Length: 177
Image (tube, rainbow, N blue to C red; front, side, top):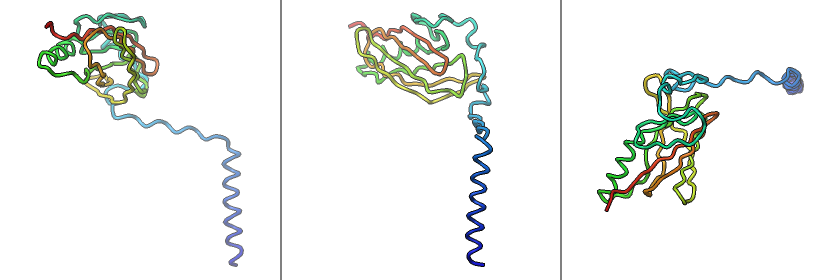
């Protein structure tokens, strides 16, 4: 009787393996709903917040000026005016900024793919950072970032996440001496 049990176990395991292999690939598991799905469902378009926004629906570089929020392609980003004032105030107080906080609202909400931001100062090297921190407010979801802009000047910010792309030209100036 002792030799029958190991043989029975081996036959049962072999049958289970062969049966699973013959059935073909299983149905892929559904992705779990992220915490922020209560604010905006994956696959949604966040068109309401984009209506009437300054900037461009086209995927092209947009000069930000002193505006709070600006659209470029698939992103509405900001608060540029606030960041500009904070950057200048830091310099006036003799503090060298570590970066600026920027929110990026994507038009197309997927599962909030990783956001890549390339920050390039005029005539300088490009700094590339990736972000996954997601926030939500009201009916919208967004990426929350700290972009490492440490030097005054005009910067080109290229952002991409999933099918969303945007380009922003923004100036962070030191106060006049």
